[in-house]
Amino acid sequence: MRISHAARRTAIVLAASVALSSGGTAFAKAAAQPATSKTANWATTVSVTPGGAHAIGNPNAKIKLDEFVSYTCSHCAHFAKDGDGALQLAYVGSGKVQVTVHNFIRDPIDLAAALLTNCGPASKFKQNHMMFMLQQPKWLEKAERATEGQRKRWSTGDLPTRMRSISSALGFYDMMATRGYSRAEADRCLANKGMADKLVNGTKAAIEKYNIPGTPSFVLDGNLLAGTFTWEMLQPQLDARF
Image (cartoon, rainbow, N blue to C red; front, top):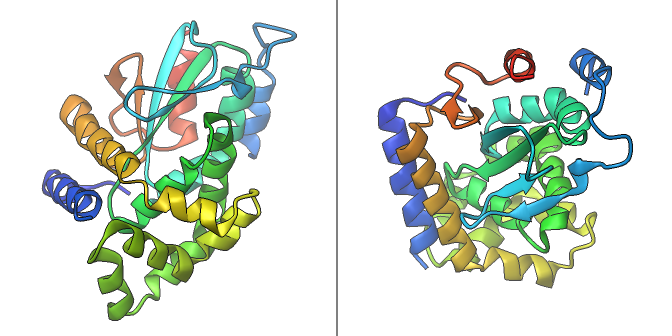
């Protein structure tokens, strides 16, 4: 979803108040490209940056790609479904590209989902992240049907209460259970104000540094790829770097 300059300012204010108040044809084409290593699978290498983003792949990769995504963004879910497999297999896994995934917080639901995808060690992030993206149509439909009373509970009160209310209503606890998380473990992550602040501050920093226009957005070797929000748009720009 693309957002205006005014909407970006609104997103920062909303997100700050939230935190502080308490694969197809493209896959086949990419998979056909040769890997730089016959043994290493860099797609399994995940580390957390000082700002709380997740860097996936070879830290010495020639190409650095920053991906800014929101869990309530339908275009982000489409990218995850259509392009993430190709990106991870042929570009990241081969060691040619390191991708850093940044959570871009737009609303309380985004924050709840991001707190859960960041739950546990860095090695669990990729699978948590893809689960929320691929199951987005199911849980986002529940959010769209939320009553006025539910939405009020999601935006007022202390952080743990708001995040638990969202997670109960949208089925997040059941989703996390399939990943091996107990309700108590999920609740601890939902109550992590330090992580909430880091996620919100990371969103603000991205807007200030790159003037992120919406999600998904991509920064390739330090340069924002204006107008790029699908795998079909991104892949040729990656290939041009080799």
